[in-house]
Image 1 (cartoon, helix red, strand yellow):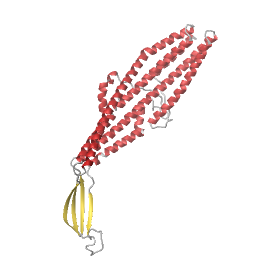
Image 2 (cartoon, one colour):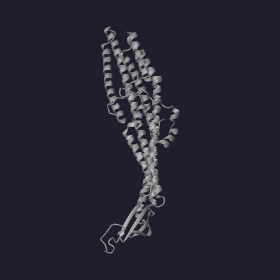
Image 3 (spheres, one colour):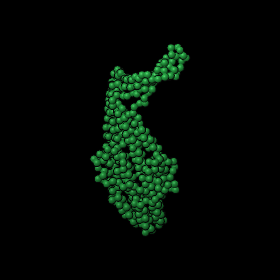
Length: 428
């Protein structure tokens, strides 16, 4: 009996260790690889997520507005027929050759110097902002997918671990029953083992429900049916070494590549150009025209014309200028607020990933070996009657808690890495 229990324990602990190193591949008949790695999920979402596709279309549309914004307006043609009855000598006619005098005016609106360029620069800044918004949408979506993948990894790992502990608990119940039958243990040991198994089965029900809910959330991010099957998470990306997680170095990369900051900077540039354009409205715009004059059936003379608006409504213009100044102030403040928030998030996630790595190392090097050592010491003590069954159960719980903590630390590290990459706007 003693040898059988030790062999079962060794097999269970070895399976638990192998669970972290080489998890078994899982898949589904529709797409056996979708879900085994986060890269497969990201590639799927990039091609099919409608929200990201919408922002890409909006960015392309904004880019197409740049050229028209700085272009001249279409010219206009005006036709005027004078004396269509020729002093009453004929019935009214709308044919140019039948009127006594016809004037053709071709006009072109021309804004004040520099206005067209400013309009084009405003449109370009807005297009840059739309492009940054599209990048930001993808950064946010990819971070959510990475976080959901980490959560699924934790759920699947916790489920496997719980099933292993349940199997080992069933073996311990068998040992307790044999000892009870031999009068070496109390019936309470058997009941305690059965209660522990019931609790583990209840936990498995909750884990399964959580897995279904998390799979549905992942499918929503991928724009798939909520009940579509996903493969079990297998591959975790390696975490970068501490040297690459230096705040000062990442701060420079965040300031240069963060989509939110880039979008805020584009809005600031647009506000600056809008202010310049508003001040240029103090000056008039022009309309130039050329006028051929037709007498009966031939053109006899040519005229030219210049028209301009007179900027007399100074009160209105001053209000518009103050509005432009306030909008510029708001854009500056929003950029500063965005920078502060982004850097705060960067610091928080760097601290989180550092804590996750430290926790993982502590569990692997200290807590888990100590828990296994405690259980290995409690097992023969129970067999000889020197240790009660409750102590043995507590030792087994310590092993489970240590392994759960290890899975959680790895999942937390992956989620924090995804958030850092969201702030960077690129993979770390």
